[in-house]
Figure 1 (tube, rainbow, N blue to C red):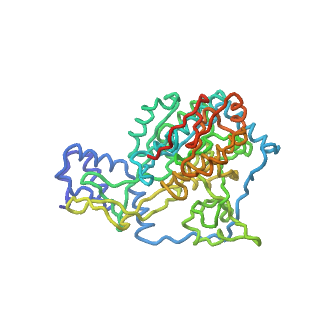
Figure 2: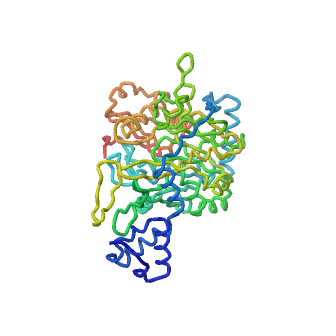
Figure 3: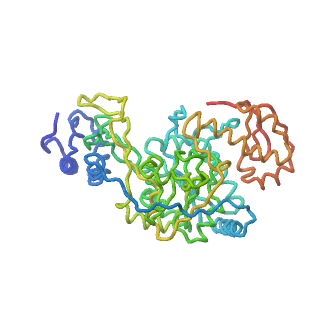
Length: 494
């Protein structure tokens, strides 16, 4: 049925919301109104209250009902990158010591993006709860938490942990933390915030429904970090704690340095507003964004746009990539900069993706399409870099021991590759400590090494502590626990 008047609505609020949908051509969301229970009606009304109708109308007009022009740049240049150097290099030492001082003074907070599900891993639950530890079955969340504990003990500080979750995984994520006693962290220093959602649009620019009383929505991307910090109380909490900057990272990377003194130091010494870590791309078409200067403005170009900007695929006379600065999604963001960007949020760019989106038809039946049928809109945190007034800092890092994202169960960037990288990374520590692990490493599929970040966060710390222990390796591997004891359980796969 179609809604043709306001007579079906009993309150002024309902009538106003309906009128808003009519104004923007979205009144079809009320087609099942007369069949709904009171709770269902309220759910739909609450959803509609939160929608920015003008924004969604503008996105539909620009990205669906017309074809936007591709941005054209007269000049694209590589960004300046602080390279990998020996720890003894004067600038490295200065940066590291500066970062340590910022940690001791309590100027750093942590911001984790953790809104995803483990579906692509074959796992039913939030991605952060995935048991990535091959021997201990530690979750991604626990690995991050243990790093925080080590840093807090080392620098005698509090690192408040702000975790951005989604509507779909908030309850299960919070429950997981409670079930595990927050992994030893104080609950008052762990802050959960649900990121904003936006409606999915069909090919006519209309809101899609996934039930008679619910609009299909998707999280607004990791660019939702900016409004989440300001609107969900994180900014206020951080200010009250004396925090000046947030270390931003994503949940799927077990190896990330959650608060890296070197990175924090370079950000601070350069008076940067937003800084980024850089990985050297392993191929021209590696699926990571590329940091570059477009007509003098700092940008990250998505890998899906490489063919639009072929300059990014250029090599020099000996075959080296000119644009090697890949984006591993690790940033330092100053709170003053967050506030500035938030005031200009209407200028923040949106990105669309054509996806398979379940929807209900005119009979209220749920349809699961086999082909893409609708659009999801997202914002990306790296687009904030274009708002900087000071040159952003780009710091190169090693992949091993710092960047091993988990996007799927097997293959590249997978659970399997992450577990192998753990063994390779921590295996080097054991080798330097005098353990003969070469013969075990040949058993690539069933030999693993884990070292609790509470026991040791760095190789230097490990080599000093291990002098007080003598561990026996087994064919199945070894997990060194936070107290130096070991676990040698048969490696499991969930």
